[in-house]
Length: 212
Image (cartoon, rainbow, N blue to C red; front, side, top):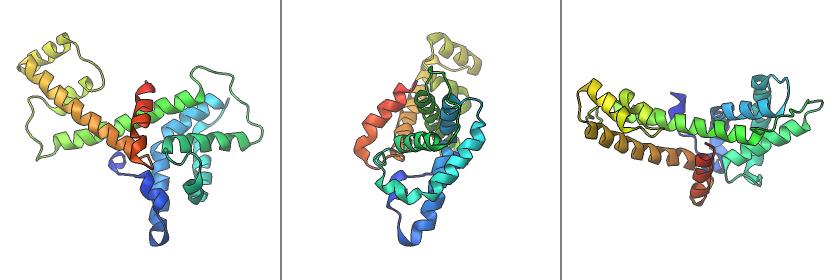
């Protein structure tokens, strides 16, 4: 599954010599991973735009200038680099009819879609871990608990599912908390993959949480 491929921004920026082609491929994959964020930005920035086609054109242009990323002022965080490059790209295009919408703005729409992609990738990885043959047994399946991981379930939610599965409510709560803790670790790992330096993680993780 494409969402499970590790695409580390620091490795892409550092690539030189014999791994240059691999860096090009990884750069393209990393960009396309966050295509929903690019499309969201375009839809909120430009009126009557075919956002998907414009996103493809943007990625094609960006791919040709990958080596420039190593010297980009926003290179430390791939989110800001991609968003900034997109803003520059749209500004340089002639005869675009700018959108008059301001809520949510293009940057906010971008960040929300960005965060959603990060969450989806982390959830996909958690599902793989939880459903692997070697995974420790759980009182309920990942499919049953998935809906509890990105929201705060009420006691009634636990009681309903416990009755359905003929389990103790406390067992479900403990299993859910264990999965939530692991999801938090995977979210941080996903965000860290988009950073040049680990010390940026607290700021970027805070930005991800703030996007909701």
